[in-house]
Length: 495
Ligand SMILES: Cc1cc2nc3c(=O)[nH]c(=O)nc-3n(C[C@H](O)[C@H](O)[C@H](O)COP(=O)(O)OP(=O)(O)OC[C@H]3O[C@@H](n4cnc5c(N)ncnc54)[C@H](O)[C@@H]3O)c2cc1C
Image (tube, rainbow, N blue to C red; front, side, top):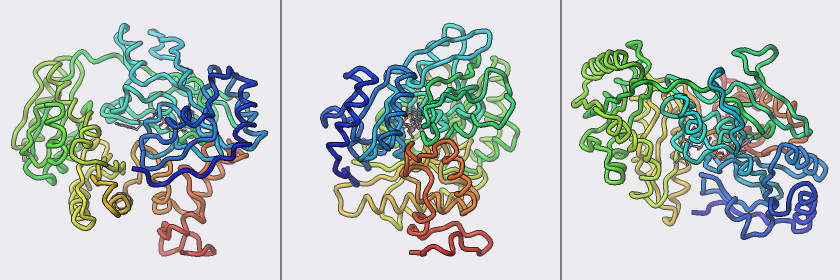
């Protein structure tokens, strides 16, 4: 499925860059042959591809500083890259640019049981942190479904979330400090080991900035004790609206589950033959609600959640009796994306966030859009956070289906904004949702984003053309944020 591709690479610039890079790092860390750079042509948003001019894999922060210097001198844009699992095209290369991979910076520098922190290099996999801390009874809470592969550098850049983030917070709540190399080649440390740090909170600005402000070279994360026990409820509903309302009711009852996820019938039927999670495939929606803590806390919370779910109209409730059964219930949810490949040649994963109480209404809206665009959509989501992941199913080999899927996705995001939500929950904007930014933000807000970008990267060389649209782009897209009837960019051509 290849939709946009390869602008020709300037061979003379390519060899100048590769030669300069080989002066500052071993030759095997610089890739310029097509067979070596091809694996980097896209990230998880495989519909968009572009061969990079050169890929480099530095082995130290000193080499990264040297890379920044070279690229500044030659005016070459840089795309930082972790594991390339991003779903919004954030790590997609630029034709005249360098991909800077952190694959070789994969050391866990130290795990501190007393401070309950880990200091890691950016290319360390998310799950490897918890594995390293497991012997101390600790773990790193943010758990994207891609945690077996994605890196902490990518998590910081995307402010990634996961099932456990409802209770334990997103990446931004679990990172204490980051070391960053700026485009000017300076090393800055944001945040600190203490709970609070004086000065402006630039760490929060960095987290979620999609590789546009600096290259992260070291991260200190917070570790938390592993709960003594965790159990999960699987509740069935004969109506998605009832399921959606049940989510709002659980939170309104003052309960913060360790995970609160929802899958519609299309999703559970898609996943069940794949992982045999034991899902109720006749239910219109199933909710997975986890409780963790001591045995007493879990028993009490499971009883309270069960009561709320029954009152909300659950037709069946099953509670995991063993750790193996708990993991089996979750395995379906965690494997929903790969399972989509079994029923559809292609899928397009959206990532909007809405206020929880509007869940049912948005699900109905999406069902109507399925008819309008003639495409099926499987809904799996972090329901407790109001973070939707509609998987639009399509076949790129069928004329026009990809463009219908894109339009379907854009309309879902517009609906999210219309009900008071946002165009992304955790996957970032990248190139995928760059036009939708125009729907959400005003001219003033966009200008503020650009001012921050320029303060960190006056050369505009770090991951350009991602995440923040130019005002002209918004004008061309023709869907500008209109506040109180005032046009966002009156002086710019509208179409
Ligand atoms: C099957 C599947 C399930 C997923 N589930 C989830 C989920 O549950 N929750 C979730 O949040 N996401 C999820 N994702 C999306 C993705 O895994 C996350 O966005 C992840 O954080 C990306 O990490 P990465 O190492 O692959 O980064 P990449 O994709 O390589 O890069 C992502 C962004 O980070 C920047 N970047 C990478 N490293 C650095 C660095 N050192 N310094 C500065 N910028 C950097 C890149 O330029 C890019 O903009 C899923 C993806 C897949 C394929």
